Length: 194
Image (tube, rainbow, N blue to C red; front, side, top):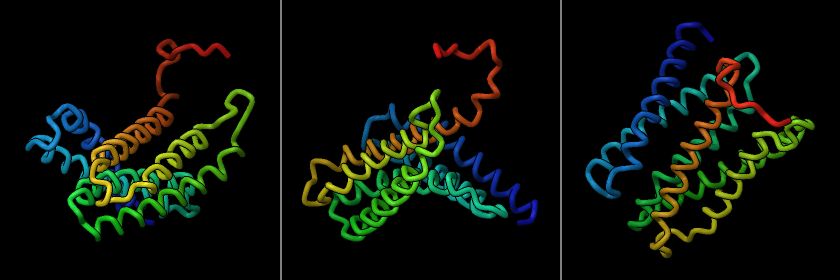
């Protein structure tokens, strides 16, 4: 792919994700269902969606696509999408429920693929690599989410909304910390017992 397009995708990826991470604490601390929660929540959703899709494109346009990053992006998109759709499903949206089921299937499939390739990277120092750990974490959330009956179980939409969006936020921060942990000066790192 040409260099200017790659730089454009990198800008969208980093800018969207950082804007979403900056807005997320406001959403988490705002009164749920209030004006601030809705406005900043939409900002979080749009910025994070742009960042995730740009990241998926960056992983896919390489001469050899990075499958692990593609799977990670799909799982994060699953969490984000199901979190966004939960309030709509709670209000009775049939289309939202069908989209939710499709995203849940996509997320579970990506988690299965991620789990399947995870144990290959295990070592004595890291018997459960982070890919496998988060793959199991995401697969458990996808399984619990798949049991939700949608509009016929109105009491659970708030739980589905919160857990899916928190999972997307948490998994993304974990990824960022893994990417940049080596950049932290040696003196500032926490010493491992092993």
